[in-house]
Image (tube, rainbow, N blue to C red; front, side, top):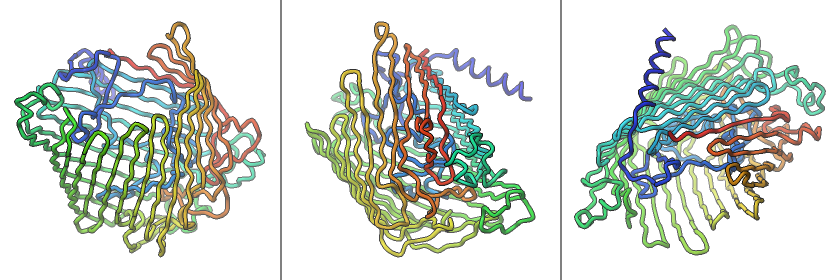
Length: 624
């Protein structure tokens, strides 16, 4: 049976690779440039296309957690749970079992799927190998099967056994996607099937921190961990279809057509779209009886192995109308949409059905080339989460000395379903919480390679996990102040890229370091008449000492702890990058502090980061 399936797949791939087609929209003369757009392109105006990153800089940062502008604490192994060191509230309208999961960085999402705009078949292959048989694979392909049909496939695989017992990460993601359109792009369909499977082993951290900190046992596999057999599985299948109908008869992308005298006189009746989503998500925590040794405060069933499951099914339709034009920028752009959501949650024998209706409005004014103003608002109706809303206003001033912007957001949201009800072998709660209120002020300034900003948050009735890993709610308001800065400086062949965030929080219910910072210092030079580019440098990360959040495997969440401080440690990685034509390679040594015998490299208590070791990776792009 497996041979037949394999043969069928090979035949399909052969047909796709042997077919050819050109996008009817005019492309750049450089066929090596590849562009992509996201599923909200219809409201993005003429700048709806983005070019893929083909630069050598940053190729060594293969782990999503290490990307520029991100700061995370994590369990020390690629593919495992992570927690942001910077407080960023998430406003997601509609039912969510958990708005931001601890595995968010390793998941594919509908809104982040890239639909490529190619003139020739495009393929990207990436492979990274590291210590302890770590492997990371990426395959990304897109091509026009015909003038009216594009096909794409993206596959990502992370397999990292880790240094410690029961620490393996096995993550698989893939998406099969397609784009269909009529000759003049008046009717278009985006569709994809998305699959996420995150399967981390959970060891609960090492049992005795001193064994690691004093380097008593150098073979990490011999260090005792809290859980020997526990593990999590998150599996998601998502079907997505979005249809667009452009009411005017001209080509929605061709400038010369849309600006002809015949069309300028006509009123742009806009674009109607209908998106449909059907998703099934299953979460499972399992653990053998042999692990019932006191790691969890409660074990309600000590006779059978732990097998806690949660199922979330979701069916969503959204009808939208906008006057946005992809051929030219408009003085005023608006969008009105209406979403209907039907969700089912099954937790053991309990089944909950949630129905919601969410109207959303967006309006954007481009008063001149210097000034822009926009607003967005939504409101929720239904048998749950009724009354949740979010509002945001943004003002942007463009001038010769950079861009100034100010945004004000206000939201009222009910706590995640995970916080309200949960029933498992180790945790049970049934809470009634007040809605959480948010008022967010953001000031930002950007000029060339400098970006700086200031955030002021006020949160009422904040919900969090306390020191017992149980949901709790603050009675008082909480304020968060954050100042951030990012700057790239180039001096000849030398470059320095620094970024940092300074934060102050008025209540200990939210734990973040006062300072988190990253820096990359590197040298770049062309070799062999610019056929080869060589880059060498060092990446550094640092955050101040604080009581970092602990991790609870059974609920897949981070919670407060007061026993151990983390931070005040410089993580340094040396890298050597090389680009030969379209191939980019890197050799990297992680955690230079390993040589100093300073065994304090935790970002999460009892979860040491990886010891010093080499990583090697190659990324190759093909354009035909």
